[in-house]
Length: 282
Image: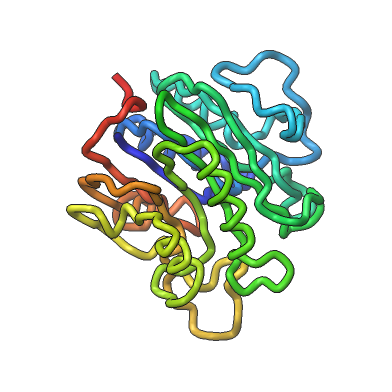
């Protein structure tokens, strides 16, 4: 089973080329579940009126925002079909980005999903507030997969610890093996912070469990949200976590300038697990 996460930091004016590159890699690697963050559409773009292939319904309490013509996930799934690979997918709008984008989370699966969930992580539920956070989860056969974009550990209004506790409890409520994939905004080398808290709560980092590892840092220190006047050290903040130990054959960073050109201010993380578990494609 292959899992991939990427904060795509999408901009409609550059999405077409970026999505072609991402789609080609998804197809060539045979990714089973894709988790994306900051996958956007322009607020002012025209609404898509026709049915959209592969799109899955969200839970009733999720925003019913229409898909628009420059939605980056729509562009990606179109590219995947052009390359002969169809995925099931869902897009969850979360908040306003840069005053002009509907910013959201996305999940794509090769196997049919059984159900989706969209728990709130933040106290704030105002789409106009950049601190607003949700997660998007999908149940594929017998495993749960989530795409997440967390707040920072030191945020005074929406601290990581409170958001993590909500996510942890939500996942514990449904049981079973769960994978959390995304931009956690907590550097893995920072002690007594968000990363250590997640490990203390019995979540396992697929990077640490991997038989082989290629690449480590997933973002430069000077990206949005990390401008603090200090030298910009590379950060490993994009993770794939499991609530159960598992055999991980490899963990790799993609689109890091070495293994694929950069297509975002984040690198993708690809984890290959030995157990195909029910979601691996044919």
